[in-house]
Length: 219
Image (cartoon, rainbow, N blue to C red):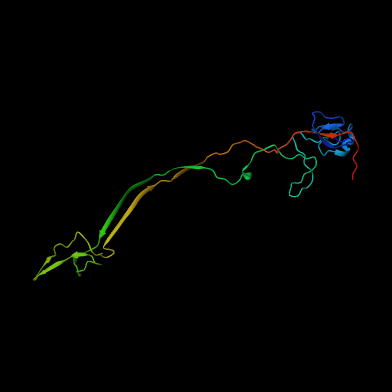
C-alpha cells in the first residue's frame, strides 16, 4: 500500500481486514456529512442520492475494468456494473444445428375393382386381301369350281406378322378410393437447462478505498 495514499485511491490487500483510513469496496452507502471530502471526489458515480448519501465502489465478486472507449470494445462508464456470472443461451445465440426427426406415417388405399373390355376389330364378311399384316380378320373362301365354301383353319396358334394398329382395342374404367396420408413428425429433445458459467480465471482478493490521505490534484 502507498505510504501516503490519496483520498479515493483503490487498492488491493492480501489480508482479511480493512486497514485504518480505508473503506471496504462493498458498495456501501456513506453519509455525505461525515465523508464530504471523499464525496467531493466520487459524487454519485457509485450510487447514493447525492443529498444525504453516496455510494462506494462495489468489487464483491467483480473484476476491475478500465473506463472509456477501447478500440473494438463496448464503451464502459465509470461506476457502472456489467456482466453476469451465468447465462442461458437463446435461439438467436445458438449455432446452426440439426435435430433428429422421427416420423410415423400410415396410409391406406382401397381398390374397389377394375373392369375392362377388349375389342378385336375384324371384317364381318369376305376379305379383300391375302396378307394379314396391316389387315383385319375376315371370312375367307375357297373357290371349288363354281361352288364357294368357307376356308378352313382361318386361325393360327402362333403369329408372325403385326396386324393393323387398331385391330384390337382395350377400354375400361378404374375405380378406387384413396385416403389421406397422416404423418406424425416429432423432434427429439436435446440439450438441457443448465446455465453457462461465464467467469474468467480469477484470483480473489480484497479491494479497499482510501478515505484519509492527500487530496488528489488534477494533472
